[in-house]
Image 1 (cartoon, rainbow, N blue to C red):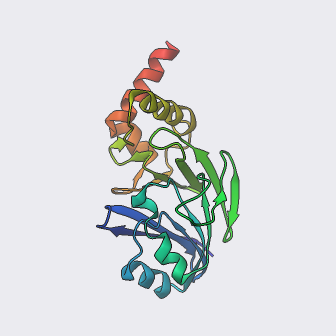
Image 2: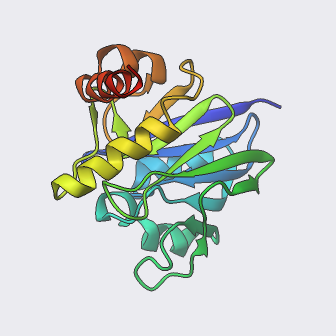
Length: 199
């Protein structure tokens, strides 16, 4: 069986939700249910999936607002770095933890800055980055200290990864780490600053 990744875009919050399962259906994972609409449910059902697990990259509303609707239809275990989301039970994820879900091995990488609970999830050749890195930019921050925290975590934890990894962000189009290292102006600044430190 091979892994399938489906991207669902919602104009509510302009967010991406990702459905991940084995080819042929069965237990599946949903990442960032920002808005659960009829189209997303149809996508799940037409591919014969059941949602057994939900991964949350961070608990900003655009990424979790659909959780209530989802939990009325399915009974997944919700995984996040946050201790709680609204009033829902969460299985807390920690940095460097490896999750074994639906036959997949998923590595959790804590990248604070955009939010304190931001996690990037690495699943095989895919990085689900939430709002840490998006096509052409990195996540927004509320002040200079958080900006530096984000930049430092990206430099230490992500830029050393295989640059051919596929990048699936919380907003915008998919990309690759290599493309972002070549054309993302904010990543280029981080790379240049790193080079200056080494010299």
